Amino acid sequence: MTARRFAPGIIGVCLAVLVPIAIAAQGQGAAAPGRGNPNPLRTITKTIYTPKTEFYAVYRPYVVGQEGRLSAHLTHITDRFEAYPVNTNVTLRLTIGGMTIEKTATAERSGVFFFLFTPTAAGTGTATVTLMTPEGPERFVVENITVEPDLQTAIAHQAPAASNEGIVRFSKENGWDGRFATAAVGKVAMAPGKTATVAVPRGAVVDVDGQPNVYVQRDPEAFYLRPIKIGDGNDRYVVVTDGVREGDRIVTIGVEKLPRK
Image: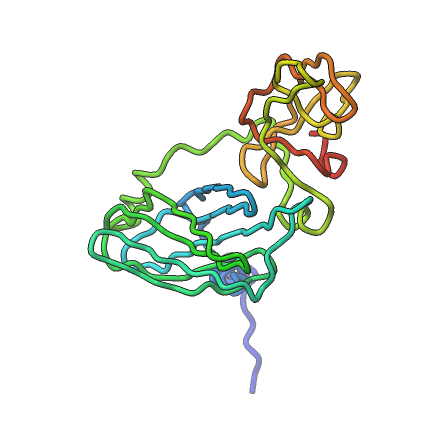
């Protein structure tokens, strides 16, 4: 068979057409299953404390007919923060209008439990997560759980994104894997007969360029390194005259583990 010869101009035209097609095909083939546009719905968090448990819920707005997820990060509060074990019984009851969904959690790892469900009706309601402990059940109620009729409505109704300026991040996993704890700022009397005043544990104070700071919690995985003014103290606590208020939650154990910026 006689081989055909093509003029250089024709070859150039063919290459100009085929190369972009090949590149496009490679790009399509490289896309991993499930990978695509980022989820346009921003995460929502809710934190609830009891004397023995930190409950930290992470979820996105829910949409009718689409599978949703609620993750519950459950921390046992002792002299440090510890993850609840994977065999812990954790359940969810989601009630929205006439719809009720009941689920038992799947453990992703110690301390992290999640629920998958597909809502069938739009509306606003509550999610109740029940944690079974040796001392009895603890219940955490997340109000104003919303299921939107469609994705466009969910995008339109979501709250503005929170600013991350000045945020220091520290994952729950890092906290559980080492000695770490947070606590609410309270009032302490520095000596018998003295008036109680806002104070923090000495171990919570971090020196940055000669300025005392504490890590103030925004949520259990996000903190602000905040300068404070201090006054008198004793061997355990130091008075804070500016920078934090009673009720602010700060890192009290493990400050050396957190980034400084």
